[in-house]
Picture 1: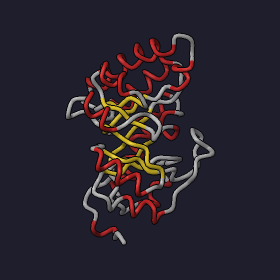
Picture 2: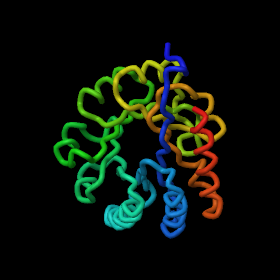
Picture 3: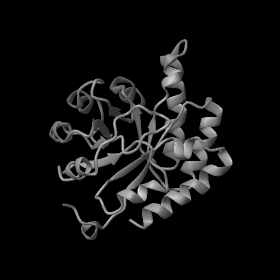
Amino acid sequence: MIQASTVTSAPKLYLLTNDDEFTILYAKLRAALATGLIALLQIRRKKTLQSANGKAKLYEEAQQIARLAKTYNVPVVINDDSKLAEKLGVGVHLGQQDGEIADARRRLAPNQMIGRTCHGDVALVKKAKNAGASYAAMGAIFASKTKPNANTISRQQLIDGCQQGIDICVIGGLTAENITELAGLPIAYVAVVGDIMDLPVQQIAARCQQWQQALSNW
């Protein structure tokens, strides 16, 4: 059992894009990144990808987002697509059905991150580590607006995942209030979508600060 007293560092804030219209999304991202509190940014634009000429639109959007993130020295991963990650010069986050980590590792530079969705399965976490992933994402921690039907995982599954020698990212319904339920666990990243990105632009920075406060009490 992992005890809170053994933990020395708090998780870092990992922001994911939502499906806002692009100009609104860009303004929100700029507000969040300008706080200096975002450690990692994932580009996940499902609606854009599903639209007419979606791949070209996504590439154009992703270029702009990656440039913005670079000005704040925030690393970027793109969801699901190793080829696009290679083209953009960014990292990638792979679901279980979105290609092999080894293939992504061959395509990408050594410093580019590769994440793997592992749900609550410790065997998948071990597999991700052995394949060379940078981090393993576990969840859903809570039900969320983004994925309301996702299966939530137990605290013990998360504890077991944290013992596998790879950075763990938690995702799913997390807020600056309920994240305290995980306090003390050696989690590397806390992935957030709606709790930050669903707010109006003018509230984004303050919410990031509330997250920082919650994580500083780890």
